[in-house]
Image (spheres, rainbow, N blue to C red):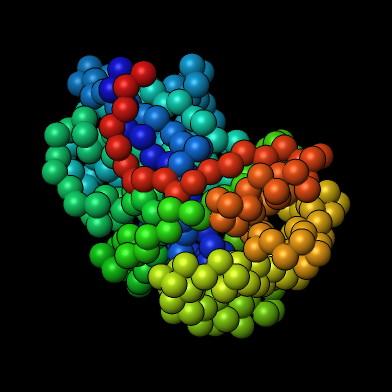
Length: 317
């Protein structure tokens, strides 16, 4: 079977909440890195005789909210391309779904690319990123490989992702698995709660957007310490507004690991930094030469190492 493959992306500079939730326009510009070891494979076949979409994930037919999100995205794609056929969707997920890693990003990016392939349309990656964004905001970044910026924009046409001109083959991500369970509050719900309850949200947005240019400079200079400092600050600022809104995605083990990472950095002089999304698991940023030593110093932590991944590709299974 022919698939479209999309890798997950990890936000270094994050967004948290949308100006327009219907088409996923964020308050903040964000910057991410695409990982090469977690991904989604998706095949879409048109079925002119079908009366609804059929969506199969890892061999199981989707239903409920998960099915509705996919069907709504397919409706948006049908409307955009002026098509009517329902689809049979087969996806294979190689992501820790809903544990704080960006499974919806790779999922909706792969779905968008597979649908475009199924109808034989020719679409630029810029346009594809806009369409993927309609399904999941962060999916706009998974269209591209490497280091990616999502321009927040203020409309469908101005909110899109593009690849940054950064070459950094030594950059590594260490995905830690502290808690693989499904998070109790989704990111979409968490964003809405935050804007309703967090009084410092506007200041958070301002500080986040002011970090865009310094981060781009640090990435282009391959400055792991500057990138790491910005990443940690961005993650902690986001967590602060979450806490202000009464949201806590971390467990005690999350906080314990953060302290261990800081200790490794100060005691062993190893440039290793952390980030996190809406979940309990940390992603560590470091360089290839330090990976084995970081793993040795964290023997109790399950770690999966990733390099910098590519954008949308074709695959067979």
